[in-house]
Image (cartoon, rainbow, N blue to C red; front, side, top):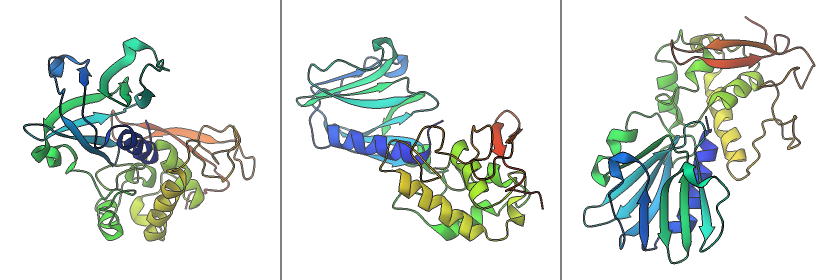
Length: 261
């Protein structure tokens, strides 16, 4: 699933393509809103909230287009007449202006809601690592509210802090020298862990190739995540599934660099 920095970049792309422009056509290829026509409405802008995208539309009743990329989704912007780079049948939303179009492919969530109800969509989320609402103390309090939760599970729980997905959760545990199974309440310096999460997402939000190692070469962008051997010491990577029942995620760690306490 895309990390918070990927969603942040998607919001910037939509802003550049649509903000301040009037829709010539809107095509929603999902049954619940397939008949909605927003031609003539003005796009106010798009913001990201954790892994959610909120595109605000100035219509007779102010609306918000709520989209979520889930596992395979993506937004792309095109000039008028430019050929799409993804299969046509995967398009779920097409928003067209005089300058071109923004197309949402394979989106996991597509819904139109009154703008006044946005909080019902994202109000449950913790502070956004890349958002204007970032609040480290609130994030820490939420993380430590259930101290027995494994650290790798806690830091990717979007209700505690928003923006960390499975890749970053694994890599943050490595960078902190923490076994992912360690209870969050036993982390020696959780404040430093949260600060590192923010710095990693901030560093990666402006580049398409995510890296926690500082190396952008293929196969060297992560220390342990989906690696066969630890990029630091060469130890064979250990793997297991960690998470709430039904929401387990593959977890990767180096037993040498991240020893159990």
